Length: 130
Image (cartoon, rainbow, N blue to C red; front, side, top):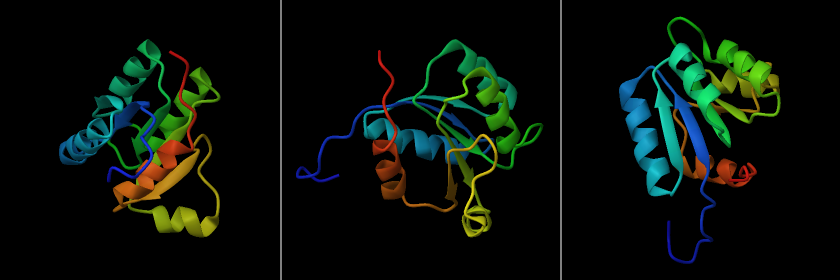
C-alpha cells in the first residue's frame, strides 16, 4: 500500500481454512493491513470462536473436512443472520457464472485471488461498533 492511498479501516475477521499455509499467508497480509484476526482450521473450532466473539467478516474455505464452508455459513447465519460471510473457493468461476452466492454467503472469492480484491471488498463491509 502506498502512502497516497487512503488508510484501511481495521476489521475483526474470522478466517476458516483447513490449509495451514493458506491461513498463515492470509493472516500475515491481513494483519499487516491492520486487521484483527482469529483463525480456525475447521467448522467446529470456527463455531466456538464465532460464539465467543463479534466479527465484521467471516472468511470460509469451501472444501473442508467434516463440514463444508457453505454449510458452516448457514450455521453461522442461524446465530447471526446479518453476518457478512465470504466464501473462498477454487470453484469461484462456477459460482460467479451462476451470478449468485450459495445460501448464507455474502460474496465468493475464487482462488487464487489478488489481495487487492480482498482489500477492496473489506472497505465495503461496515465495521462493527466497539
